[in-house]
Length: 584
Ligand code: PEP
Ligand code: MN
Image (cartoon, rainbow, N blue to C red; front, side):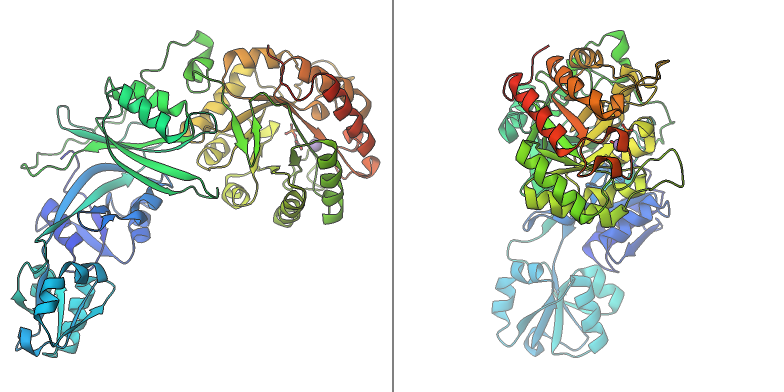
């Protein structure tokens, strides 16, 4: 095994638990291994650096998949670096003086009890009593010290507690196995994992993914792997955080992530997913003697096996057009961005009150908008200006969106806002001022919410795509780019709306592109022609600001559109050719 067995290990379980036995077998009698109360404690000890490795059970040969570990791996804070298999040998244990005929109660975990039906039938005077854990059941029996109470637990638990083993190996089908993943802290971005795979050893890779709206679903994902000659060993499906009725699929496959067959197949799979993350490659568990450990030096990680890229695209291999066979379609609630339908997102610059957002939502929905925009955390030039209603604003915006059937998009300004906002909003906006806030980009990259990424005031298109790459690299493949005007020498308009960005981006990337003429020109009466123009140059949609009483808007009043302005714009867009996105 390629991990350092002299390092500190943590696991869930007490003395004599089956996990402890497996870990002790790995680290040796003098190894550093500590049992903790919960799996979350294990992950916490590893991410805080108190322990180098954590041991999480993922599968039992009789019970099947153990889901808790997968949900903990979903956070990406820890990565699998090794696999461990432990034997479960159930024994009937009891205090000194007890015998099978004196027992009236046998305590253990319900799964252990179910595995020992034959034994329990042979003990006619005893009834099974469910307990949280076999080792804790043994501890309870030792504490009570009554000949009428026994437990099903390990031999090690009996020895540690001074209990007798009345019968050994009592499970109906003999010993069973538990498979564990040894995890360590996720490597820092751009740094190679500190645990290196041994050349020549059999490897496995664990990937988490969600197929996207257009990618052909699970069948297509598995088809890519099969076609690439990659053998899938296990599939686990878990609810996708925050997205009802969608799943994250955990795919365990044969081979390491960099193998000649695996790497290109995984890139093709990524191209069919709205979420994709390689959790790690690790050595398959073996019963052979362990070899000494070689801690790997830290080295920059390179992206390998990417398709051939033009030189400009070297900073964004996943965002580049070449990375996907089809353009990406991003689903926001029931709305698709990047397909054939031109999508209008509208709403106030800032959420100001329930009355205001309800009024806007009702009007824009009736006029044909599909998404409701509105800021609750506002990036303002002047620190004394209105800064947004925060989470209260988010709540009232969400209820307006639900009432009028509009998924909501709102800006996050800090990594700490990402999870709480993602729990409510349908799409997260990264504002122009944060296009290169790399911590924020990574944070939204770890969520399962689609992201609207705005171009920075002085960001080149290649820098915008490299910013998108930050998000994609963390797992979230659902990114929509937004041209919202850049700083130039021109002062007549608030910014210079760079409509040439649209055909350029549509050539360079598979990601959808929308245009925000409101911030682009910043003057109400010039927005309407630019909405038309955005559609004509091939944008997949527009983002515009609408207010029930434009001059009274608390932010960006000069560019706020009235309901009538908005209705006229929607009329223009439908005149241009129904809902279709123009090809470029
Ligand atoms: C906004 O959309 O309200 C906003 C602040 O936009 P930008 O980040 O493009 O200035
Ligand atoms: Mn604004």
